[in-house]
Length: 131
Image (tube, rainbow, N blue to C red; front, top):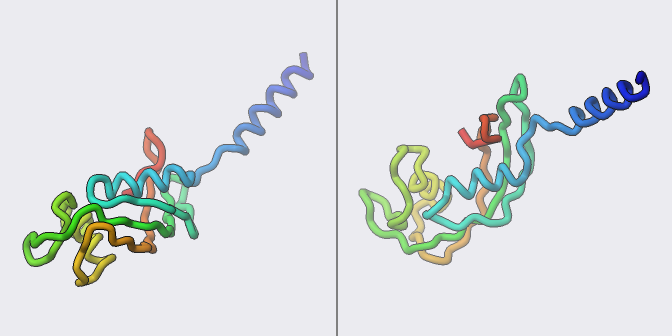
C-alpha cells in the first residue's frame, strides 16, 4: 500500500513540475492573430523574450511577426487605412497599431512588414490572452 501511495505522490508531483505559468507559443500566436483578424494576415510569430509577472498571473512578452496587408488603404479621417481595419479602441485599435508600424507611407495590399512588439498577457479561465 505504501508503495502505491509513494508512486501516486511522485506522479502527481512530476505532473505539477510540467505545468508552466508562461503562455505557450501557440497562445501568443493566437493572441496576435486574433488582434489582427480581418485586417491583416499574421505569420512567423516568434517569442523573443518574456518576463513573468508577480504571482504568475501576467506575462510581458516580446515578439516578432510578419504582417501582410490584405487591402489597399483608403482615406478614413486624416489617415489611410484598409477598410476592414477597425478604428474602434482609439490608440489600441488595429488602425492605430498599423499606423505605428507603417508610419505615413501608403498602405497597399500585399505589403509585408516585420513587426517587433511587446505586449502584456494575462491568465484567464480560457488560457492566456492579450490585455
